[in-house]
Image (tube, rainbow, N blue to C red; front, side):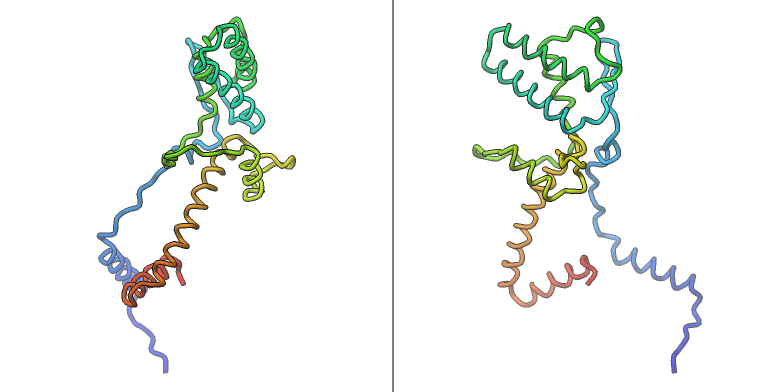
Amino acid sequence: MAVVSRVPQAELEKFAREEYARRYAKAPKPKLVNVEAFISFGVPRVVAWEGVRFRAPPLSFDLGRRLLVCYYALRELREARAPLAERQEAATEALRVLRSALYPRWRRRQLRPSIEEIEMLCDWLLHVPDDTRLPPPLGQTRMDFIDTLAAFARDYPGWCGRDGFPISWAHYQYGLRHLIRARHREDLRSAIVNRVAGAEPKVYADWAREWRAMAEV
């Protein structure tokens, strides 16, 4: 015969809340990161230049790619101490690309930025905030732009448009960063599984209990 509790539901819920608070009172609260990046994702940014305010809508992938070429060209010419005429020619082309990224349209009569300012503005527009910076590699690495683009399209089809390219520059940057982290997490997960497989029974039991609770299985 089933026994029906006569304790009011409100008292049971109160007891459950108090028990939960008592048991997990010392559990550390999660550290929140990338809150600002999450909130501002896809939101236009504003830059003030010599008293003129410009609005920078989220970059398309194509515009971001063009700005990246301009930025690298300006930086390499500066580091190589190229003749001023070459640097000025590259800056003029970069400024032409910048005008299509800022609103109201940047007119020549409004501002005449220096070569250094143009390079800095390209870098600012290309930047997407991220609190979890990846540690820099200790040795020289090889980066294949075509390979990373293909990896993005393969793993994030929902973040690609009908043309197969990323729907925005920010989607592309965040996707690549997550792709790197996801691969390292998978490698770490495999290493942990192999390490735990050789652990003492009690150590494995404690580990399995904690992770089963987190996985809700």
